[in-house]
Image (tube, rainbow, N blue to C red; front, side, top):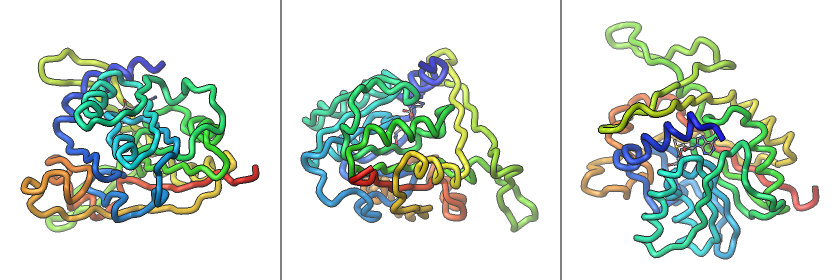
Length: 269
Ligand SMILES: C[S@@+](CC[C@H](N)C(=O)[O-])C[C@H]1O[C@@H](n2cnc3c(N)ncnc32)[C@H](O)[C@@H]1O
């Protein structure tokens, strides 16, 4: 178990969930991005499907799928994030299985057990991302789908003003993008843990999916949706929203922050 990562997310979970509006009535893919209501990458009917969420946070995506009749399991390293998920599930009257675990040592013996595995902005926090994809592939049923939204390497670039009216990004090395390292801080709590976000080059992710025996069906670099008067319609326009991300709208509109892969395990391996 990566205790440093766990401590970071346990320390910051409450603030993260307070500052971010994450909907349970649509499936989110990333900050200010259209949800699945618009992108339509999820299977049309998830009722009865066994679903697994990796790096779930408070598991809002699992709660959305559960509200549509799926049987959902959500894994996260942070007990505090899961605690928020447990409260949300109680408020919504939904049942999901919340499991504390490290994506690098998933606590499942069940092979070919899940029809849908999904993950949003969690993979880049893991050291061996390829191994997580390999394990996910073994956990999928034949015909099952992996829906992966991961950090884009450009998201870790630095914004610079080159001229009075010209700004752009600086990325020294796409293939070894800078690590976004953060120390856990939250009001009233001592510093706790470190999170390191290391997006992988997208061709590597594509290769890992193929090497794990999956067929890549879709690849998206979605653009954010302009949300007008978000305070009047909290959580309605985009399913993942926060004042901080809205301040960065102009940046998000110029470079992709996440890349989404949809991959399927063949019926016959
Ligand atoms: C940016 S948050 C995203 C959470 C959620 N997917 C969402 O969209 O709100 C990243 C999550 O990954 C989890 N995480 C980071 N490293 C992990 C690991 N090695 N194993 C399991 N979860 C991990 C963190 O605890 C955190 O909840």
